Each structure stands twice: as structure tokens, then as C-alpha cells.
Image (cartoon, rainbow, N blue to C red; front, side, top):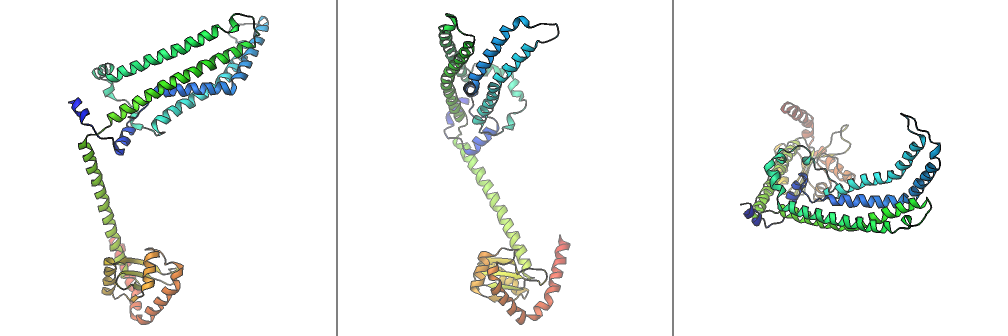
Length: 373
């Protein structure tokens, strides 16, 4: 059955599947990348301060050996020359330690996309199952990892053999040399060894990562039924979002229609656009848009305005400009002040009785809104 399921997974993993797998820590990663970056950090440290560090070690060694007969040892005390040696070693090793820490962080970040996978933190009891562990021990993945470990062991052994052969052929072991040559010998030997290790293990790390990438993509592949089900869920989510947007739009329209009853004027196109405006002296800096709409909703605004005897003025260019540039609940644009002022002056002259009743209507609607809230 498991083989049948694997065979039926013919579709590439979707973005949603990849994201969920990444959160669970299921992505391509290999420890060899961290090893290679650590070796690169070591080479960087040698290039940065290897020569000066070698000279410091050599100078300290010369000083210590030349004054060794003067050093007095007492129980419970550390001789000062030895403390100085610890300081020299710490300064020499500091770039290596800092580089290794940075390399480890970069290795993990490169493979995880610098994203924290919190679901991988914590104890998973299924991993403590001895039968599952026994199965993993003799699985195909374990065999592949074992082969890769064998290749790494051979590669590292070959590098060590080359380094040992070159070191033994150095004049240090056959002819007298100066004491300062010891530092150069150590620096050059480590540099050659790390260079070979970076080259060989870099190839091994690339092969290991390519295998892990291929295996992860293969494990995350989906069946056609899973793809269809995910599409259905996505469509369902889209339908829910559309329904929420429709409800929000209806609520906004209902609120705008209720506000039309307190408008000073409704500017129309006459059939395509309708914009309701309010202006209270001493309260509003400029006329405020209470509602706006086009086509069907514009007709509803006009019908609601007629029902509440709100003055309506047909002005096609002003109506179009108000609908295009003004926002509901905000003052009108400054370039329309003069045109709207003329419209308001007209309705103030022709609908005096309406504006006589308008303050009490606004107060009554405000009270109803406070009670309903």
C-alpha cells in the first residue's frame, strides 16, 4: 500500500504544501555544508591573522624556552609565563572560534531560508519508538547516508595522507632550521590541509545536498486527489472571503443610506452617479461626503433622498468629479469648493423649510443611533 501511494504521487508539491513542510522542518539540509563553511572560516582566519599569529606563537616559544630555567613552580600557583602563553593562544584562536560560530549560523540559515521553524522544537514521542528506529536503521536513506559517510571518511583520510606526506618531506625534519620557522611550518601545513578539505568536502556537500533536495521534493509530491482537494479548499476560502467582502459592502451601503437622511444635498449625474453632502457651520471645515454610488446604488441613494425630502441637484461634471475624487466620511477636494458652494447656496435659498427641520432630524437620528448602539 505504501508503494502504491508513492507511485500515485505524480504532481509537484504546491506552494502551500512546501510552506507547511518548511514549518515542520521538512526541507533539504545537510550537515556537510556546516563543515565546509567552518573550514572556509578557518581559512579566512588563517589568511587574516595566520602569519602574525604564527610569529606570536614562535616568539612566545623562543622566549619561554630561553627563560625556562628562571621559571619557578609552586604548588597552587600558575607561573606567569604560562598565563602569557594562554593569552597568546586565545588571541590566535579567537578568529577561528568567531568564524566557526558565524559559519554554523550561516549554514543553518542558508538551508532554512533564515526562517525559524518552531514546530521542530520540542520532544516528539514517536521518535522514541524502538520499532520505528529499527526501521530507520535499515532503510534506504540510512544506506545512502552510510555510503556518503564512507566517502567522507575516504576523502578526509586521503587529505590527511597527502598532508602527512608533505609534512614529513619538509626540511624541518631533516635539517636544522630557525625556531621562527616552526610558526611558518604550522601555518602552511594547516592552510594546505584546510584547502584540500574545503575542495573535497565541498564536492561531497554539494552531492549530499542535491540528494536531500531530490528526496525532499519526492517525499512532498502530491497525488492528483490531494491537488484537487487543495484547490477545493482554496476556492472555499476565496468564496468565504468574497462573502465577507459582500457583507462588508452591504453594511457600508446601509450606513451610507442612513446618513443620506441628514444630508444637505444630493448631487446627481442624473442617473449614473449620486453623491450626498453635509455641511454644518462651525463643525465642518468643508462639505463632507456622506454617501456616494453609481448606477444601481446611485438610484437607491436618490430614492432614499426623495423619501426623506433631501434636496437633489443635477450637475453632471460636479457629480462625476465628486464620485471619482472624494472619499466617504472625508471633506471634498479643495478644487471643488467653489462649485459645491454654489450648489449649497442654491438649495439654502430654495429649500428653507427643509433646513429649518434638518437640525432636529440630525439630533433625532443621532439619539436613535446612540440607543441602538
